[in-house]
Length: 85
Image (cartoon, rainbow, N blue to C red; front, side, top):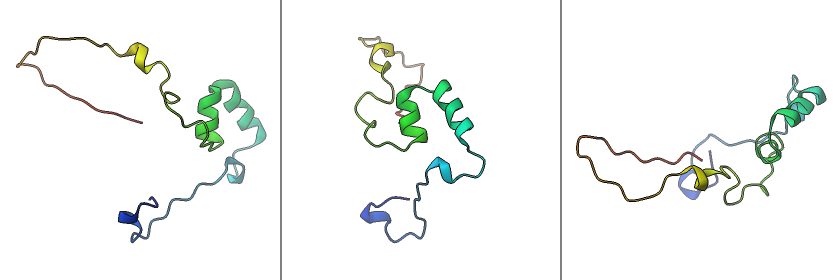
């Protein structure tokens, strides 16, 4: 789970293990991951690097892709908002 004080009473504990401890993940698998992932994605998802978890590292193009502006509110349409980090 987490180390947050509100959840310390739970029996579930979060364990992070390096990929090398997985019996099916070899150096060949890692080399393939290096070829198919970005450097940031590889560091965060495979190498468990906390140093790469900085602002705009997860979605570096997010601010360019987001459309900003003033829009007319249409009461017939639903309004949703979400964040997925």
